[in-house]
Length: 77
Image (tube, rainbow, N blue to C red):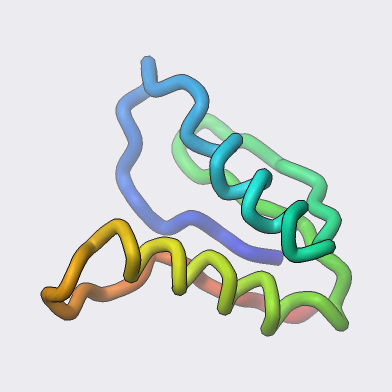
């Protein structure tokens, strides 16, 4: 499971779609689990490291050249 550990505005719409699109392009299937304050993506265990890498690379690209802490947490069940 990948958890988005960030504060999101309750009226924010559509932020998960670009993440799901990037994972789909990498051949990684996801099942979104959206809660009131925290959202998760369920991925196959064998895809977990690769999925986190795809999202971390996307976050780094969005952040630009300055180092930035990622907001992706990986958990094995």
